Image (cartoon, rainbow, N blue to C red):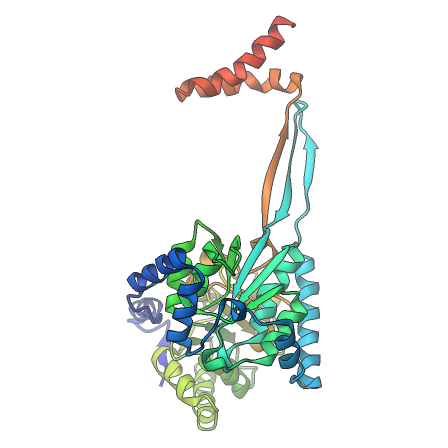
Length: 435
């Protein structure tokens, strides 16, 4: 059974704080192991990657077979059914159209002093995407990572997708093809992250690494950050649903289970002002768990981390949601747009009972790579902005330098940075001399 909380109970605040503080991440102490793997890859390059792939993925490779060949990709893609291809193509089109609207614009203007100021956006040159491998790999994640990079203008895009025992998901290769990926490496783990960050004889280094992975991948991303950029350190999936009684309890139950089935550490929370409705949803979850294919995983998630919270009203529900800062937030209420104005912290918001979170995982358009573990308080989901950088522009005229330069020289003097001040003052002296 999930945790049942009521905001009017005397012990609610302590129980809610405990719910927020639950440790859901499976974080074994892997940092020392990962550090050794990264050092090995940096020192021995291809040889280290090949040995580690044989050890962890039971796959024997050579420098020539680290990446899929064009013929191998074509052969695997040919196995995809027309129906699956059509669905993936629709998803790619919608994701591309959505992200195209995110592209920021360059700007330039002249201020009152006559100085010209502005900024310019340029893409990173190369990006690497990590895709968990085998039959459990998700082609939707390929689209969500690769398409924003291509829309941003990234010139070279590489994927690291482990294939344990040589098992390949043809849909992943098709998704990479549709997204414009340049090379697909059949390697994974910390060794793949290290290879993408530092490069080997056969693997060119990238500038940014995105995509989810296990504890070893997460630790590797932490360690290479600074050498390359990373998107985020993703934790277990989560969903919070705010729902009134004018909903089908079975629909809400399925929405909660859509995240619970990801991982035993995933978290699904229902917040409602109607206690009877909360009990009906909990009963619907239990009924669905009797037949759900991934019931062992979903059941453990719901039992250990699931919650039904009864509030006084929807305003209080929104306030609690902001404290949770969920990865996914569904507003299944009569006026979802109005309630959404009270939401300040959420990775993605799904408005109304006809907008299940699962639509966002595949064909909605917005990105499904979202902040977890309450990090929506200070971060956003993956977007085109993750693959571009802003360079500022400034041009002084003699008149502009004369107008603002003395203040710069004065501030440099106050900070005891003599050369700073002199570099400005030398130009001011030339202007003042009339030379």
